Length: 343
Image (tube, rainbow, N blue to C red):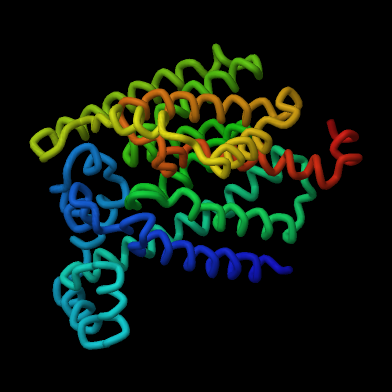
């Protein structure tokens, strides 16, 4: 396989994933059906808190919209309304044609996020799992990382999810390669996207400590922490007048979910996930172990009070580390002799 075919594969699979991500189904409401985070209200900054504070991609759409002439946007809207297949597509997704430009540009950005997310995930797994860095392996891993995503789609999809997945995968990869400036840039951008960017700081601090570089990196980490406080505080202040609240409390839902009878299928799923992540735990790449713990545990604990534990998309930040660990486990089972030699 050539590099061109590799990127064509990622672009194609990412397109199918994007369609599933934005489509309303029985399992999730797509991009535009949840009253508190309707797409055009997210773009205009009038959606409910806390969703409106996840502002990176909506702000990018808003900025580009302001740079495109109203006549061009109107022509695009009229074209969609004239063409029956496109009109039906918008109706299928529950999109308003008055927001044609916004929807299409946001989809372009989310599609690019999926494409580069897949490449970053494949690179992370190859780097941390000592797999042969061939295009064949990279293609399988990248496509696999994308095709697993539908398992996360419960309740609804949010426009800030694809950039968050990409940014976390990139951040971990940059930490692995000790590219601190690149990590800092990704962190700075991630703060605009979602408050969970803060989870990257203890991971980075642990990594610096393990490398004996904590004192050297501490000013940078403290500066990034101050940036997070400034950005998240500023965004929260800017949207303080919006409907909703800073947090959504769902403890009653979570207690009910945890205390209902678990099916055998659910128990088997949990056991398989634990095996994939935890097999020969002490021999796993230390950064990935730390990243998994510093994402899953805080998300689960805070999610008990402020989210819905069975809304799997809240674990997107943990997915890059889990994927790398799971690939390492599968490599161990498939190539046991080589695994022992490498370890």
